[in-house]
Image (tube, rainbow over all chains, first blue to last red; front, side, top):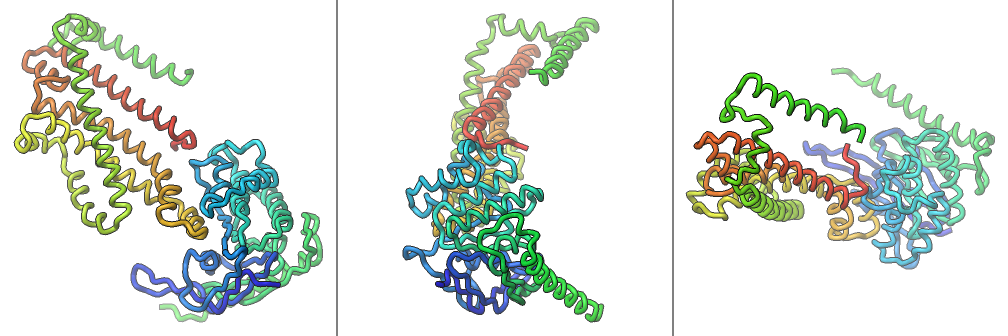
Length: 261
Length: 247
């Protein structure tokens, strides 16, 4: 399998306004193969979103390198953000069309196909303000796939959505990823979401963010909500949770051992 | 319409109480004219109300249009160039902190008792809210949208047209609402200081001749003008931004 993204030993250091250096990421290496979905799970502030921005090319790493495989000679990303981030001045249809405009594509049939797939039929002319939170996520998801990106990057895509809607959206997203044969990277702190949607889960440590474990998800490619009670589902979720808890205990020990001043 | 019942009733009751107070206590009209006298003053034929109103409205709108154009251009400049931002900002802030009507007399020393000096005062009063609001709208954008467009290889110009400019529209209209009020204030102050026509001049002249009822007549027209301009901005905003609901 060809790697769409190969991250080699990257680090990212920010300089604060006071001139202090903050190491956000350190020694991250991972590869994302074509047609697979990987998830990154870790505590808040571990640099998960930073890693996504580095892979998207919006920011540059301080150390290491990122190699990006190309589709038709170009590397294009689709992005799903945690708060939808729609253009409020555009209708549903025009929001989904945005990436096509930027990459100069006229594949407008894809918009109709995605509107159908995401259950947005009949809402094409609605503005984001007229939609529920769940419907806005659907628009955001359709926008991420419309230009047939090399990889779809998802940054906690269902944060703030009620539990039942979240499960329905996760199922729809999983189906889309499979049907569209998409490559994707999901950043989340929801362990069950990571297990349900991905093939492999990378567990990250608290700042500086490092990859401390890789957990394979041994579920069939075709997933449906009933698999949430499979042994393989519980097994992967347990491994990820144990790793996160072990890290949390370690950081508590370190804090307890530190002399107070 | 149900929600308007109480405000309309309150307004009508206020007018009746005003009329009753003046009649019962026999307040002289030159001190505090009753609403009935204000209505009559429009029909005496001694004052060219339409002509005087047109003078003030023309000045206010002309000054507002220039103020908006200058304000919008300045907002673009200080958003696109951080160097020009740093150079121009102290002057813009200093001009805003200064009570602008205070500089009206000096404008006439510099530019004479001309239409230019009157319009300039209105421009000074109107451009600032446009600059500040539009600049905020151009810069206070959803960072994720900028990341999204950057990740697709969009240029700074594309991000400006597709994200920054449309994002600034509600902010611009909020500035325009403040600007229209400033335009009327500017027109009246300019006429107080340097004109022989317009509603501002009429009010000042009424003071000298104890024709208080004429001044009240001008107040009513100014109130209606203010409402029409403000309402016009709101209607235009709704027309151009069907996607926007103010909080």
